[in-house]
Amino acid sequence: MPRYSEQVVSYIPHLRRYARALMGNDVLAADDLVQDCLERALSRMHLWRKGSNLRAWLFTIMHNLYANNMRKLSNAPQFVEMEMESSILYHEEDAGQELEIRDMQQAIAKLTPDQREVLLLVTLEGLQYREVAKILGMPEGTVMSKLSRARNRLRTIMHMEKPKRLTRVK
Image (cartoon, rainbow, N blue to C red):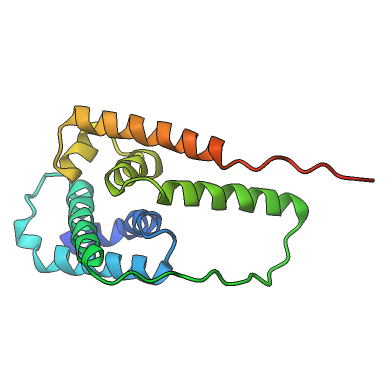
């Protein structure tokens, strides 16, 4: 059986993916969140019960760190981020896919934090409802209802914000 630290290291890609999704693809903030999560997990390895689900425990740590950070940020002054112009040229078919991905990311960012967390843990990480319930500390039925509300909200956002197709003039 691999040592505890080796097991933790094996989950880093999953933690990074979830952190990047939570942080809206802010790579530096996501990496900080992962680092804080790993530091906490390694410094408190005596609290993990052998035989229990290590992945769920790590996601619980990350969730708690994220929730604490969001609470702190809600009390801090708000800044408006300016969009940077992209100098990257895309092929026409790549541009369409990039726009769809961007639209989905923006729609997910408009969800409430609890809806976003449930949606990402179920869809991005592929966790079962009972695992998500344990990670987030809520009943399984609440997970299912938050997921349903998140999906409905996404459909609404994506439908409302869908631009009309431009027609080409030859």
